[in-house]
Image (cartoon, rainbow, N blue to C red; front, side):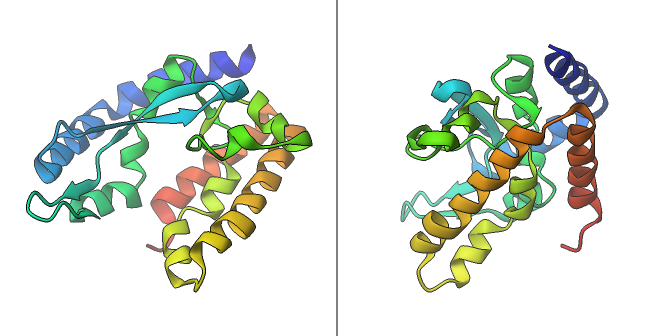
Length: 191
C-alpha cells in the first residue's frame, strides 16, 4: 500500500514538473517519425497479466523500403530515457511501479518456472538495477557473434537473478537508492 502511494505521488510530481519535457519530446517524435508519436505494445505485467505499455516512438519506418531504424531524435530520446516517460501513466493506472523488473514481451517472463516465477508477483517498473546494467543491451548483442544465445542464455538469466534478488530484498529505501542511481545514470554517465 505504501509503495502504491509513493508511485502515485512520484508520478504526479514528475508529470507536473516535466510535463513540458514530455510534450516537447512527443512533438519531436511526431515530426521525426511521421506518426502520432506514441508507441503502444503489449507487455507482461504483474501475475503474468498482459497490459499495454506507452512509450514515445523512436523508430522511423522507410515508406519506400519498409525498413525500420532508430532515428537521430529517437536516439537522443532513448539516451536520456525520455521515450519511457509516458509509462508514468501506466504507473498511475496501477499497471506499473516506479521501481520493479522491466516489463518484457510475451514469451519471456510469463514462461518462467519454479522460484523464478516470483518475479511475476511484482509490478513491472520504470527502472531496476537490471535495466540499468543492461541499458545498452542492443549494442552488447550487436558485438556478440551469437546475439540470440547471448541474450537468451546470459543476459536474460542474469536479469532474472537480479530481479529475484530485488524480490527478496526490496524496501522503500532500496527503491530510493535505485531511483537515485537511475537519475545519475540518465544525467551524469558518459554517453
